[in-house]
Length: 116
Length: 216
Length: 93
View (tube, rainbow over the protein chains, first blue to last red):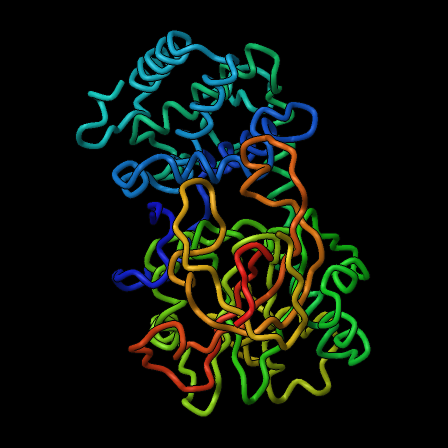
């Protein structure tokens, strides 16, 4: 049983060695993840996120970038713990989509609009 | 354009200041989802916008300069280096860089051995000393290949390691974090510790590059 | 059963593939190496990831020769790979 994360030794292409600064969005997800997992909140305890990332499955794991994976697993854990509901999340996603569209900040890639 | 992260309102994707960057656009469902989670958690009072902002600032404040300080000290103080190699956490703590949860292992490059670090399972990284990892460190390509063909991967970073030098790959799978002490460049004998720190790059402490040569 | 090993001791990584959250990469299972360092008892991620309580396990650094890990290894004979592995994944070799 090899999970999608367990890639040591597998075939892969050349490394893209260019360094780019983390986007503000990535930093936000990193910070949010740290906060929900801290001792005060303990919603995503240390070491648990990895298990959720591993359970995303090969397709999702390989399609999402690093912080998109964390977003996916964070949403799953918030749902499981009853902190957020699916309806709340869906409504908020649509609200944000509309807002970003209005400000011209939305540039969805192919197939992304259908997921909302 | 309001800046909600500092005004305490809704979570938002904007930077604190400056013109919009190309990556300020939102391209994917999961990006929207991430913003949604943040806004919902703020609305529910589980986190505050201030806490998010402070956490980002706290993480931004941790840069490879911390690791560089440790390396430069190790280059100039043999006793410190010996303590660091024997007990990484104690060595880092001496320079006010405490490790959280994890065990630091400092590994030293020599004329006979070159060290490089990876986490094949996820992206374990000495964040306390180097900040957040570069994207390539988290990539499938690096994680898959550097354990199996380190010389080829290092070449992609422009680093050629001769056959007479043994390569030591360190795969961080559990609670160990590694810091590479690169070789001190030639011609740096008269340099101060803080001048030496400028030669110690992030990549040299991961082991995909050598430290910078002065003047280059 | 907890086992304890000493630095310098030859070990073999269990060649098992159980389900669950495991921090021993698949590529190293069944391979032989040598204990280099002992980091004492640490939380066992296979238990704590489920928010369960369980005994801590000793964490070791094990050094493998690359030519023992990859049959077609292209580098030098002396090249090595260090991995931190919990005691319950190791057996004497």
